[in-house]
Structures are given as C-alpha cells and as structure tokens.
Length: 196
Image (cartoon, rainbow, N blue to C red):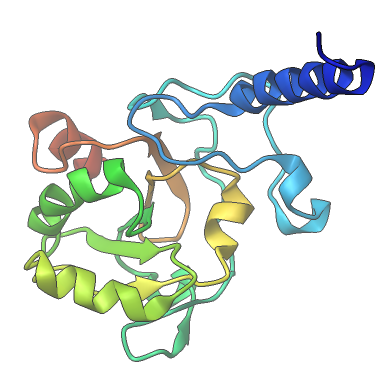
C-alpha cells in the first residue's frame, strides 16, 4: 500500500498532467502562446470571441495596422512590415520545428514572386537554422527572414503557422491559422483581395 505522501504526490501529478492538455493546439497548428507567457504590454488586445478553427479565414482584425515590430532580413538587418508598404504583403509566421509549417512551405514558396510579397518570417530563436532549411528544401522564391525574439507571434498571440494578408497600406485584410495550400484556388482568391 502506498504511503500517504506517495498518494498525494500521485494525485498532484495526475491533476498537473490533466491540466497540461487544456492548451492542445488544433490540428495543423504547432504551438499555443498563452497570456501567462508574455507581459501584457507585449501583445495586441485579444478579441473576446473564440478563435476561429484551424484553416478558417479570420476577418475579425480587418483594417488593423501592421505592427511596428522589427525582425531580421536575410542579411541580419532589422526591418519592419512598414518597409514593405506600397505592395500587398502575405506574412507567414512559421518555425523549422513546426510540422504543419514545413508541410505548407513548398506551396508558400510557389506562391511567392507574384503581385503579393510573401514574407515567411521564422520564429526560430536560432536564426542560423533558417537559411540551411530553405537551401535543403530548395525553397528558391522565399527569403529567410527571422524573428528570433518571436516578437510577431507574441504580439499576435498565435499558433504556428499563422498567415496574415496586409494591403498595400499595411492594413490587415484577414488571417489564417494552420497550414494551407497556398497555390490552391481558395488561397489564390484570398490573396487576390489585396490586389483588387
């Protein structure tokens, strides 16, 4: 028969394990960032409504301005989304360790080079992993932008991958959480919203 302290330990361990699963990401998403993980001044205000399902188009942030947070270009220079104004931008937040991100990368690469600027901004803390990842997978149209402090994903409080479309003035049109086929008809129609 287990001792009383052993029983209490098993009970606490069971409750802790059960509590860990409350933040399980939706299918095709890799991580969840909770309010406990970031300071209140680091994030955008959160809508009270439930988050859309993975793969659903979320238009609840339409017309919000792009954040002014800096991330690194392939040469290691700081840039912001404002540096891309004048042209629509499809911002993809991803990481090399994120399976759904890796799954959608070839179609995202194929979508790059058109009327919409496609920025795949890695949330990897080790930026030296990103360029070799692109080279190994022959992603030739995307450039290895990196956000090693994860400022963008913390600001938006999102799972990876998350993709946000901004118009040429830097205003959000929509966002999608989860992997998507970026060369499919649905994605093409969604991206065309920025150029119409």
